[in-house]
Amino acid sequence: MNAQSPIGFKDAVASPISNGLSVDVEDWFQVGAFEDVIDRGDWDGLTSRVERNVDEILALFGEAGVRATFFTLGWIAERYPQSIRRIAEAGHEIASHGYDHARVFTLDPGKFAEDIRKTREILEDATGQPVIGYRAPSFSIDPRSLWALDVLAEQGYKYSSSVAPVVHDHYGWREAPRFAFRPVAGSDLIEIPVTTALLGSRRLAAGGGGFFRVLPYGFSRWAIAQVNREDERPAVFYFHPWEVDPRQPRVGNAGLRSKLRHYTNLDKMADKLRKLVREFHWGRMDALAEIEASRAFDFPVSQREPAR
Image (cartoon, rainbow, N blue to C red; front, side, top):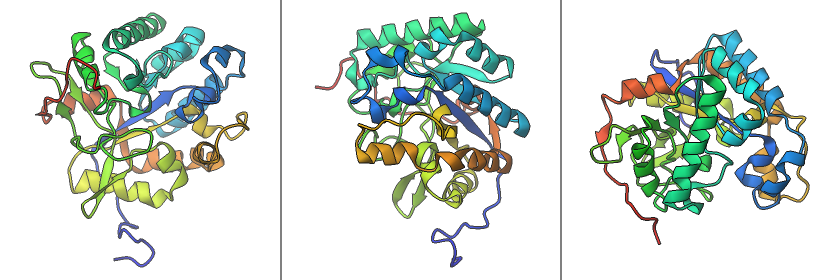
C-alpha cells in the first residue's frame, strides 16, 4: 500500500467507462442546510446567484468537452427560463429536481404527484424537450418515502437518481443496492443510486457534493476508479452551482455544522472539478440510464402508503 495514500489508490488511472455527471440546480438559499433558518416565503427577496453560477459551469464543461444532466428546480426554471434554455442548447439534459426542494418524505403521495407534474411542465415549457429523469431533493427517497417510486413510474419517468445507499444524518437508505435497480414491479423505471465506494465492508459516500469539496481530491479519484475497475460500473457524480461560488452571501444565523458543510473549500471547487472532468469519462444521466437498464435487476421495494 502506498504510504502517501491510506486507501492505496494514489496512482489510480481513469477507466474508459462513461460516468454520469450531474448538477443539482438550486440557489444558495435553497439548500437543505439552511431550510430551518431561511423561509421559503423570503426566497424572492434574496440575491440570486444561480444564473451566474450556471454560466460558469457551462463554460467549464464546454472547455472539457463534456455533457451532463442538470436536475433543476421548477422554482428556478420558472424565474430563469433563459438560463435553462442555455443549458439545453449547450447539449446537456434537463431533468427534474422537484419544484421547491421539499424533501419527499415531508409530502404525501398526492402532493408529490402534483410537485413532479408541475415541475415537469415548467421544464418542458422552458426547453421544448421531454423530461424523463428525476432526482429527489437531498436524496430524500428512503424507507420513509418508497411510495414515491410508484408515483414516478405512474407519471412515466424513465429513471430516478434519488437514493443514497449510505447512513447520513440528513438522508440515506443503507440497505439499498449500490447500482441500478428496478424498484416498481411491472415498470421500466430504474433507480440509479449516487455512488458509494467500499473500504472493506464499509460503504463510503463518494458521489460528489460536500464530500468532494471537503475531502482531498485523491479520495474521489480512488473511489471512482474503484467503481469503474472493480465493479465495472459507471459512477454517478453530482454537485451544485453554489459550490463554485465563494462570493455568495453568508448566512450568519445558521448552525456551525451547517456553515462548515456549506462554505468549506468553495474557493477550491472549480479547480477540483476541472481536474475531475478531464481525468474521467463523463456523460448525461439519460445516456447512462439507457445503458444501465439492461443490467438493472428487480428490487421491488415501493409501497403505496407513506410509512407511519
